[in-house]
Image 1: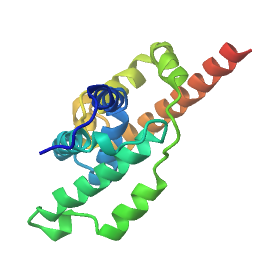
Image 2: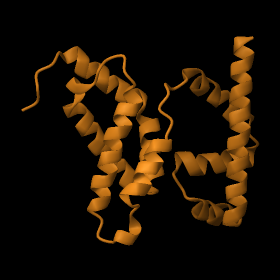
Image 3: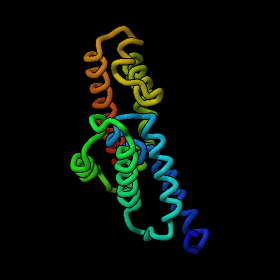
Image 4: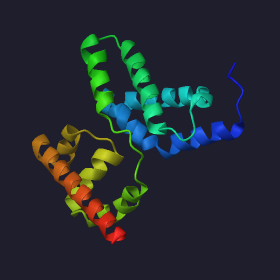
Length: 176
């Protein structure tokens, strides 16, 4: 059975998970490279977080705590894959996990994103939507828009750079 804990602690942990869910999924996808498998691991991670909510220390770095749980869930999921060639070694997973940022998420960046997305050129916005919202890989996007995969990757890179610079500018203007 689960250890007893106040419902408010569990509620707080679950709210934090929901708030950071897209970031957690991004972390899992970065380790796995497979959106469908990452969705399953995200669900498993949620279940573990729910079970271990009493172990989370309020005021500590929630994202780092969840990333640690997610990393173990990725390793567990990959251990179940039949073909060893399709999975990263534990050493590679450790290196990827260690390089993930764990600082608190800056909500002002999220607030600036819609304004910056609206400023993207229509074709760049389409690429971003196909990649992030519809979770298509560059090869699939290339087929859809009749470009080369390389051209799609360049367009996505430019769109990301534009969004990063736009968000930084929005934040700087808000602070001024």
